[in-house]
Length: 334
Image 1 (cartoon, rainbow, N blue to C red):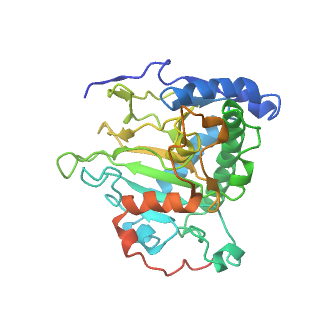
Image 2 (cartoon, rainbow, N blue to C red):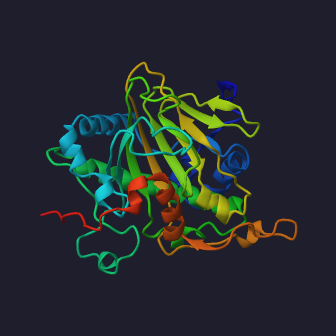
């Protein structure tokens, strides 16, 4: 399929500074921008979010620190030991497109930070587990948790605008994101050639949750599939997040918003790092077609589900190890 650079009409820039300045009065102008983007390609750049250049640079420095650890140190906190989608994903440990060889990348997943005596841990609530933390990286855990909270706050504000665009009260989504199944990921794509024919950095896929915030380091590779089937290279915009909606919000909106396949084909010039934040709802969130998105001409297209049930169905199809994952919990922090 042809590949061309995306235009600003295809992937627009949304300025969320009105929402940052005033979460109430700033909803309407941002809702209009987001609504147009989500009814179009489903991707947009986000500016005015308040994350400074120094903070972004610091996050990428922390990502490089982690991936530079010895392989044994990373494997010690491997995701295959966790049923909760936490920990290190080895190179070629993920297959986003099952028709292709495993993805040529490694990653690290961080979820909502919980105390060892959290009631949901004892109750066995799906995807409620302890985070896995690497040893020997001073200040690393605090930096990751600080950014997790920053990204959650951005997503919560964006959901106010999304709700208004969909004809709902601004705080409609808030009860479904009190303790979300959000995942902060660090990703590293090496410049090494593919080991197998057809292998790429990340196979074509749609994201699973409601919203994704992506920080990129300036190295190209992200491609978005246009509605006409062409692949669009998403250019890097310094200081902007790349944002897209996921399948859970598509279900909620009854296809008023439609998620978009995307992939990563590294250029091979140097290591590529990216930092996505995936915003999925609470485990027990009721995901059913919104009443404002259902009409006689558009009846419900999806059966109701929950945040945890839907996430499990998608992860089980992505990671082969999940069919035999160990139930051994992470060791609590001393």
